[in-house]
Length: 168
Ligand code: APR
Image (cartoon, rainbow, N blue to C red; front, side):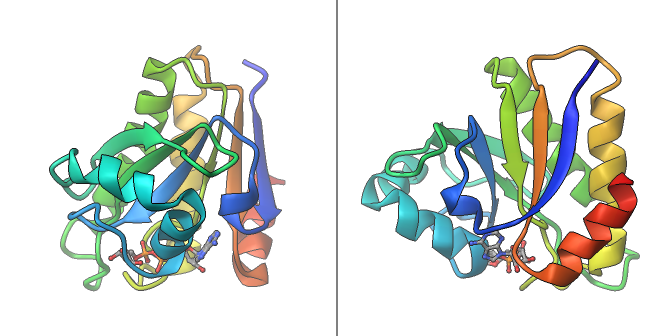
């Protein structure tokens, strides 16, 4: 499988991919951080569509249209809140990546971009999160699927450097 994994330092709302992944909260009704940026860029219709989804559990993923975004879809996932690492946070973060990838593949999507899920407001250590993200995507890519291109979209340089080092 020649699937491209790449790190990019960018605002995820600007990316022209089949789906961008949103680090949402369980209500799916918007918030701050990347969630806020995605809702601002997508417009009111995204919130209206999210209202119909009846929330999302931590580690799960749900998909909507992209609305005013360049991306055709948004895959909303809810990362774990870091609580010292003894409350199954690593496994739940892995599930966010796995379920987002599975959802993209179920819909035949070819390109997608992840933010650094849970590493902002949810305080997950960025280095551990980046390792989980890359390992999980690499594991998924061992099996054939429609997904050809996965971008780790880093807002900050420190995250970008982490992913670059892991992807060498
Ligand atoms: N593009 C890409 N990445 C972004 C953007 C953006 N426009 N804005 C923020 N980020 C990055 C942050 O720098 C961080 O690295 O997204 C990563 C995730 O941080 P948060 O957005 O705070 O998400 P998270 O830690 O998962 O917390 C989720 O925050 O915004 C609320 O509603 C959200 O309650 C939920 C919680």
